[in-house]
Length: 228
Ligand code: DC
Image (cartoon, rainbow, N blue to C red; front, side, top):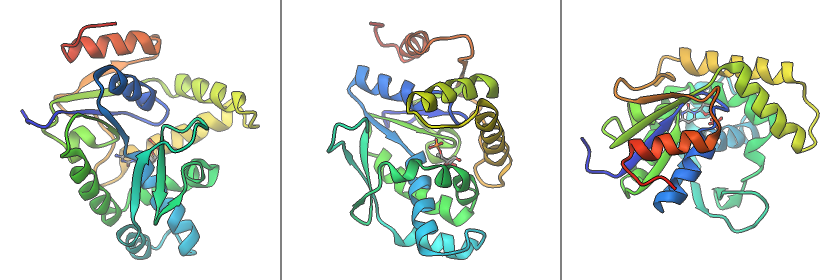
């Protein structure tokens, strides 16, 4: 078992990983780091800098060239942290449907994953961190002290995402969201490098019939922390 105090939380898109990780981090006074933002930042930069995202070599060059920084939130506009690419604030640009649509392709490239994995390891070495992603417990930190794999059915995840999107006043249908989640699941789980799957020693939680506070209590108990 590692001496690095790192809690790895993996799972499919919209399974509630980030919400759970934020709550754990708050309870333990740990740093919360969502690695999905890095793949989103590479996708955003690639969309801006090259015209063909099917060109793996060029996308990998972008991943190696750009400087991604994560800092404490500088504004109170709903953000959890600031995401900077080459010094520019891209916190909200990385959440557009265009990035959503292309990010699975970009994150399947081996060279992109190598570059991001190296950066994530360097950040994680600081310890006292809840790190969220798809491959944290399997590849990035296989010796993490604690590993949680949070899953939920595609229908339940689409339902939750639909409520969020409606609350933001955006016009998408439940069916569109469900189709997009299914597609991302398929790409994320079937890629050759670091596919989405639970680590052998991960604690798997199915959150279909569980509210987030129940899941939080369960996790804090696993971590041996007192439950609020
Ligand atoms: O969690 P998210 O939706 O922000 O992740 C965006 C994409 O990045 C998703 O398609 C999977 C990918 N990703 C990954 O491959 N490995 C990670 N550690 C985190 C995210």
